[in-house]
Image (tube, rainbow, N blue to C red; front, side, top):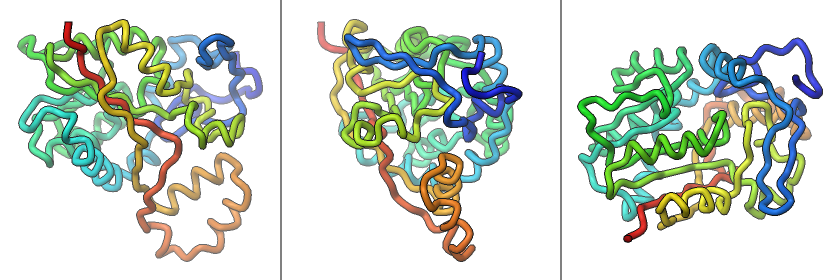
Length: 281
């Protein structure tokens, strides 16, 4: 059941560029600070929402996302295996990271549950399959040098199951990359309950410490933890701000000239990129 909203489809709640503020009741573990949406729709309804949602809004920023990922890969190159290693992006949306990694010489693949986004990725000639980490059938049993989860782990039905599936796809010396909307940053703590990431599309809410706590007993150590910066168009960012009822966002959208709305704007929104490697035995 939805605590504050009725007659809203699952696709509106769980699409890649969807998500509605004010629909969630959240509970917090008093010992570890972990936050989860409760109550929530059934697993079946959530999966249906992800797979059927129209995602033109998310995909409209494709080129900006490719450039942001290329920059991030270069920034973290010291912690990653060199190209042409095999890379898998779990929850790859329209394939922006897959293209970025390919541009830098990697053998890049992706897997994504949203049908429309898979079609977009295939239309770009990218190696993307429909599905999830849990359903991926390894071709020829060959594992990956790098597995990435860019803003994915907060969406899944069971984060532990997804992490275990991602780890199982790695070579023994492989690298795991997890990017999250981080509720533990000073910025997130400052905005508190008005955090823009508290939206129906996010079933769980993590801090970087939570991810470390999940990876440590699985034999991984965090070798890098950095703020994640990306660039999206001004118009897109303002529209998101309007949907989240940010003060004056609607006014700014109305008065800003159209030619400025396509300008790329680099920004930081309390996201953290963690890179993990298996600890020596």
